[in-house]
Length: 92
Image (tube, rainbow, N blue to C red; front, side, top):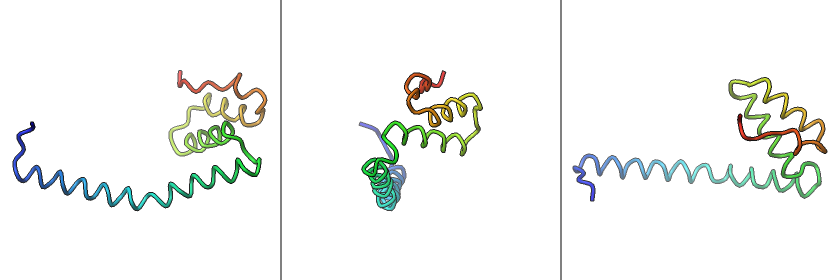
């Protein structure tokens, strides 16, 4: 077993408590995301693949954008019938 001093143990306990508080606070937002996905699927607006592609496009907009990857995602959204053929999610 690890040989931890009392101060280190106290910090570990403090960290775990803080982490639990944060995760508990995030749970309602996670539930909202689940409901959003379900609503769009149930209403036939976006299927699971289309939702994933839209999420990918959103994340690309938030980060440094690889224009080739953005174009691939855009093409997959514009032409959903070819999405599985043209969209490569390997990151290569």
